[in-house]
Amino acid sequence: MLFLLALPGIRLALAIVIAASLWRQRRSPWLAAPAELELRADGLCSIRGRDARQSYAGNLVAADIHPGFIRLMVKAAGHRPHVLLVMRDAVEAQAYRELRAAIVQGRLPPVQAAA
Image (cartoon, rainbow, N blue to C red; front, side):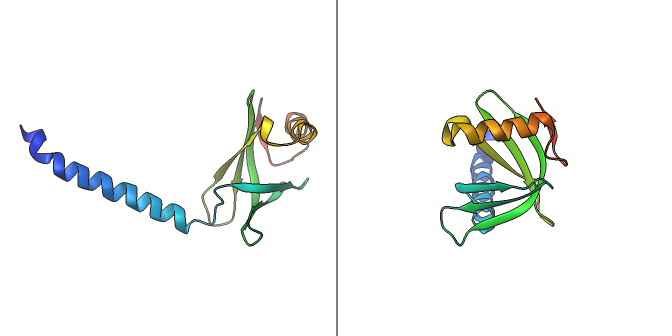
């Protein structure tokens, strides 16, 4: 019975949390659909969106290789890390193989790869 009395309050709190999360995502400089990823040998990377005005630069912190995708973690100064998934069938086969090989062979120095 007490739960039923608290139900409207729980719904309101949940709605506030969801609204705050969406508001924060809209204010974030992170791109929802990146179009181009450029990795340099020193671990710096830049990500550009489909719109030429959107871009994000940071350091490659970690990379994990999975059967169908590569998970990259990018962190800019003063921001929390962002995860970028590179799907195998979303990019050219040769580019995907080169990125995977660079991670496995440790050619991206700051990356802690987990194969």
